[in-house]
Amino acid sequence: MRACPTLTAYGRHYLAPPRTLVSLTTFTSLHRHNSAPFLNLSLFTAFRSPFSRMETGTGSTGNKAMVENLKRFGVISSKKVAEVMEALDRGLFVPVGSSAYADTPLPIGYNATISAPHMHATCLQLLEDKLQPGMRALDVGSGTGYLTGCFALMVGAEGRVVGVDHIPELVDMSIKNVEKSVAGSLLQKGSLSLHVGDGRKGWEEFAPYDAIHVGAAASEVPLALLDQLKPGGRMVIPVGTYFQELKVIDKSEDGSIKTRTETSVRYVPLTSRVEQTGGF
Image (cartoon, rainbow, N blue to C red; front, side, top):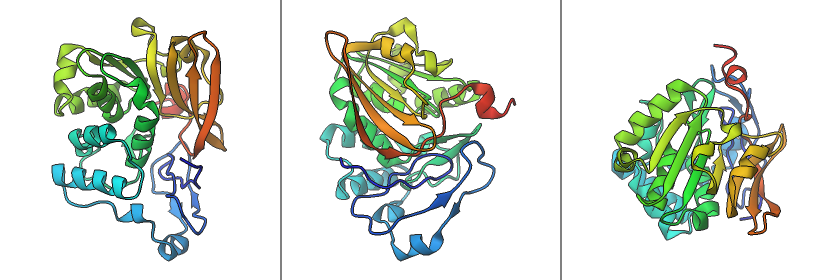
């Protein structure tokens, strides 16, 4: 997947689709979600991204249409990723009244967001080889639990998936969301768990992990996460401050590290709970 321009929305990332002919510009705060960002509507209207028309229907119908559109525009090429995203209804993991199936990030409270569906699909495909049945995965900044649930469906009951977020209310919300979904049985069996903690420190109890996903941008890769990555494992993490890149980090069997850049992105920062919430 070649690098594409990025569009920032609600302080999160929005990867513009391939073949974009104009530059899209958005201005927003990385830390506050009290109001919608200012979007250059003249450009957005002049070039109607196919992703902007992706919301169709509600419930399972809308979720299936979302996946079909991601396949149609070449975002999803993996049969397994398509099956998992179709099985796990995104509508169960967003606030009531949100545009659940539109390809856009959404605010979920506490100055956090759920990523756009195309970014979830991208990360799932980058990690697919490390999300085989029986493998272990860590989701840092698990938010409403959507991507954590996708990981759990991919590794199955014989695997182990851990979600970590430092906002207790979001962890409570994510558990309730997962319980309502097809991943609920994996939560009950203990192969999926969601925890309150500082994701920058990982979750050592079930390390090492075949796959690690980080849902916020780090100024540098946390050493604790590298330590908890299994030899032969892969981490996907956005790195940078204002200018950010989605990094794919592979740890070889001898422990050496190889890093490549997948694309430019725009995420909220990987930071402390106090900094994220402004002390509240």
